[in-house]
Structures are given as structure tokens and as C-alpha cells.
Image (cartoon, rainbow, N blue to C red):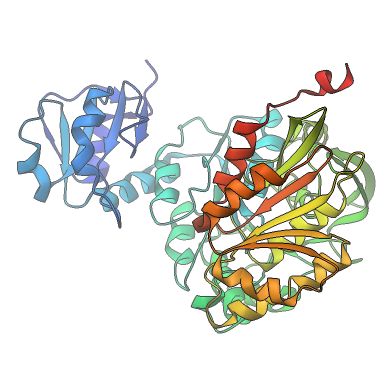
Length: 477
């Protein structure tokens, strides 16, 4: 049996004590009692809303072979007969195991942060590095104070490439995470107005993202967006932190990994990428200029970690959008079909503009419409009204004439749009769900975008539930 961790090692590095007769080792780690697999260890983390200790019995029933609990909660575990490792604090113990995972690993590590595109770039790196070796990357958006150590602790010892996403809502949050990950390459996708409610402006956001430089391995490299207005500031901060290998990507003439040209439609893109002084044609299986731009960062990272660049380029035609981040569905309606673009996972001004551009590149069928279904962008603070109102510009520039809105902050956009745009406004998501299901027509292209807290995934789910998925083959018959 190939163990992820032996129990002996876990007890040692987590500074815990075993209770019962522990297994020789574990095959995986979970913090979710519902999805744990037999042979895995369950870490009973206490979160903001729930305490994992309350679900330990469910984890055991679902096959957990070992549970990690805090000393203070041990009396409440008395009914359980499963082996345990008792620690001072479960999250802190997970962090110590994560540090041990990084210490034992010989993998080349890439860390990604940025206001927009972190998860997409992380998934792109997973995809393009896979032909060159064993890749370990975070699932979903595990990029916070528990997601990063969990991802590290799950990293097998024989991993050759590790890809980590590091996020933040406040200053000071990236620093401890990147010092745990210790990347050889750090990417900042872009700096934009995200979580503005926690910052005074873009400059403070850039300063928080620049914390990623502080955990870089000696001799490591950073990749920065040359097209972003904060490039000069980030370059200077990297230099002040002692980083000597600074690279850039984007359309800028001086970018090291340059997007020389771009052609795209609603399903895919073709780009001309200049890498190592040579321009090559690259096909990408996901649409959008923003995807193409981040592909340049991913390909640059491949070069820096000495992966096979030609294999990475050959993998890009098979790249597909991440769920909730541009995933497309073709649904049957009446005698025709509609296209649903699912951008429901999250939203800030930059990502909404990218989604609007993607909608503009999509061609409705017959008498169909381009419909932007937009919900509030959260954590904008005192800037909220202004940034919502300013979305009117890109909507009008894209020629989008149908806009469906929900959420109190989207009232500002409703009021900013002229009468030439057909606006449907609802104060909450629930009422917009039923409207969307009843109002779509054959040929429509519907793009759904909001912050996660608005629950716009319900709109996506309702449309998929009410209209059957249609395959490419069925459309051709």
C-alpha cells in the first residue's frame, strides 16, 4: 500500500498523541464528513460557521480510518471507537503537516494570485504541466487559511509539479500562506478592483498581492502582467524583496511571454505567442481574450519550471472552462437551442467586463438575443454604487440590448442604462430565477454572472433543469 502519510509521521510532525490503535497510514485527507473516502483521515477543523468535531461520527460512518481532534474536544468524542490523533489545535496541526509535505517534496512549485483569473490559471497550469510529469493542484478554489495547508498536506511525496492558488480579502493574508507554499515561480495575474470594501484603493490591493514575493524560494522567479497599470509598482516591490528573476506576460511589446495576436469566438481561441524570441500559433479550447492572456503566464511558468513547452502547447486545445467560470451549456428549447454561459462563481468589475466581452463574441441563432444576467458584486464597500453604475459603459460598447439584474447594488446599473437597453430588474435572486426560466427563447445566448453570495448558480441550475442538454452531434442531426 502506498500511503499519503504514515500515522507515525503524522503523530510526530503534528505534535499529537495517538488514541486507540491507529492504522499504519492513510490514503487521503478530508475536512468534509460527507465526502470522505474509506482509508482517509478526517481533520475536525473548527470553522467560522461549523465545528468539524460535531460531524466526526458521520465521518467515521463514511469510512474514516483516523480522525484528528483537538484536546479540548476529546471528552465529546468518548462514544467513538475509531483511532484518533489528539492535537492542541486541528488547523494548526494541519499547517504543521502541510509544512512537512513541502519539506519532503522535490516538486517544482508554482503559486498563483491576482484579483481575477486565479482559479482559471491554476487549472490551466494543471492541464499544461500534466504531459510533463505528476501534477498536484488545489481542488476548486482552496486558496485561503485552511484551503492552502489542506492542499499542501494532500500533496503526494512523488509529485513533480505543484500548483497552488493563494487568495486574500485583507492585507496580511497572503504572507503566511506563501511562506508555507514556498514557490519556485509566483504569478500575479492582474490587479483589479476586488474586495475594494477592505482597501482604500487599487494601490493597497497591489501591496497585498505583492506579499507573494516574500515566500519565494531563493533564486525563484515571478511573472507579472505587463499590461496592468500596477506593473511598475509590482516590479519595484519584487526587486525590494530581493527577487532577481522578474518576467512579464501580456500584449505589451516588452513582455517576456507576449500575446502577439489573438483571434477568438464563443467556443475557443487562436493566439500567436512569442516565447523565447520565437512566435508560435497556439489553439486554446476555451474562449476569451482574458483566457488567452493568462495562457501566456501559464506557458511562461512551464518554461521556468523546465516542463516540456511543446507538450504544454499541444494540451491547450483540450482545455475547457472551469465550472462557474465560463463553462458553456447548449440547451434544447422549443424547436431550437439556447447557449448558457455560466460565470456564476464570482464577480468583480474586471471579471464582469471580461464576461461581457465573451458574451459580445457569442453569436445568437436566428432571432435570439444576447442577454447579460448580472448580480451584485460584493465587497465593494463605499465604491459599490460607482463600480456597478460603471458597468453601463462596457454593456453599451458591446451592443448588448438585454440585461437582467438582481440584487440591491445592481439598482445603480439599472438606473445608469438608457431606454435603448431592455432591463429586467429584481431585488433578489429567487424572483429572477423564475423570470429567467420563463423568458428565455430559442437562439438566445444567456451569460450569468454575479458574486457567489448572490446564489446565481440557482439560475444556471434552473435553466439546465428545465431545458435538456443538447450535444454537438444532436445539433448536427
